[in-house]
Picture 1 (cartoon, rainbow, N blue to C red):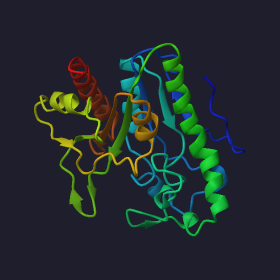
Picture 2: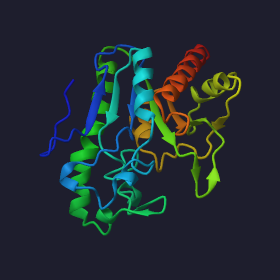
Picture 3: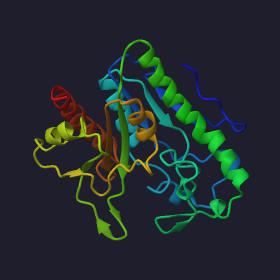
Picture 4: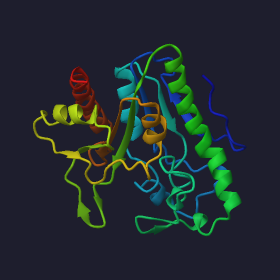
Length: 254
């Protein structure tokens, strides 16, 4: 397995966790990091904005590592903030390099020439997805058809509307694993579970699961944890445990 090729500033576009894992899963985390490569400065934002949900999926990296450890799975975590380039959007999608995110202007992203956009994709997007593909192909090469787990987190509210779902399964038409997982999660007392709420996985918008899992016909699961639930080490541990137990139960029905 190759390691990330660093940019001139030493930035690594992805990070491998438990790379030698030989379990049944490959875990991916598209928005694991809020890191802006040094060559891009601060994108015109202050430090507080780079800690917000607009820059990354808060708590998702921690959950990813615990899930990967529990199931002896290799995990690929994106090393670049979604404000530099969103690795779960198609590169030609205007929102892949957002000029505004949740009402906040991203000055360094405004009116970017096509060549600059292409350079960002080449430096930060392409290496991450090449790593995901390499991990999956390595499993297929030894006769394993891995289940792809995509870990995300969502803001507790958007546009002034609170999101009651503490964990959500986001799926497209292939619900082979989504439905058993929903059933397993709904057996857990005291939590609110969403089914494609506040949004579904859209194959015209989401990139990672459609490209890496759906096109290969692989079982997959895309999960959103509410960020106020996974914003601390204790919350990450609690929700990873809930998720892992539910996943074990769900797999019995697949």
